Image 1 (cartoon, helix red, strand yellow):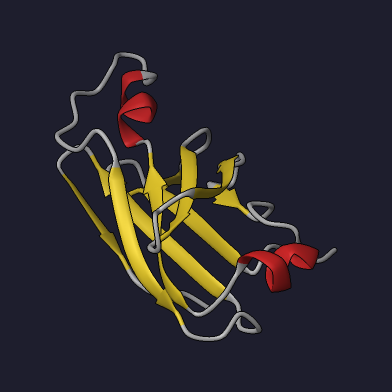
Image 2 (tube, rainbow, N blue to C red):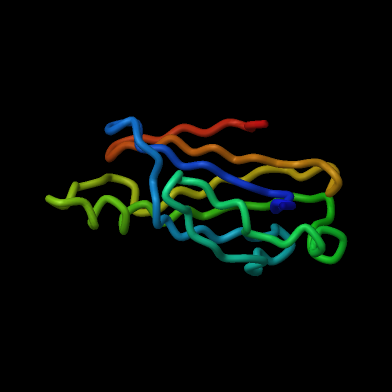
Length: 118
């Protein structure tokens, strides 16, 4: 099964668990128009954000950003968890559309971190 050329993984560092249900939007800098929308699965991953066939048409070298809607996740916890960041925006530069870009996001109610994954 082929996966999207841009993937992500969201973990809640306050529970040590994958995060399911975070809405994600990928945008491109030129005008930051939406390219794709998806949602994390039960493992906290979104591997079908873009179809592998769309790489040549949509992805060109340039600056992109992913928007993670984290407030909805923390609000949905029982009991609801107050969080400081309602969303996380991660900007990154795509150098070659032929490469795989994995964007991990580690979240907690009052912080987050990210890095280029493999």
